[in-house]
Image (cartoon, rainbow, N blue to C red; front, side):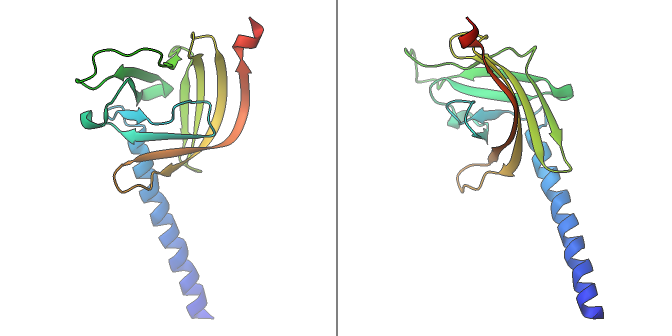
Length: 160
């Protein structure tokens, strides 16, 4: 009986240690010195993937995000140096004044409230909670966000 109790305590401590390590890894996503490539073509998808930014991963109109302090977001587009022009590409634009993030380390969730669109800044607004997990790929370091809860999604194009 004592051995089972000791095993339970060790497993619990191991779980706490693992969670602390996971939290520190997840906090890299929110470090404002880090930049992240949005690999998901449409942000309205139920799964969003961010990959760590390196210049060699930049291709045609690569969207780069930064999670800034106090829940602010910043983004930019970059293209590879060998790309000179493009046509017919959907660009996600975000109203950064009305877009926010909030991280909950207790359950490893990230809440995103995004206002933006592809034709204008007034296409949609949503607030969603995502479960954050590490991207499990050999050639990339990043994060996968899986939709857990949607507070609202307003299609602002319908109101026009």
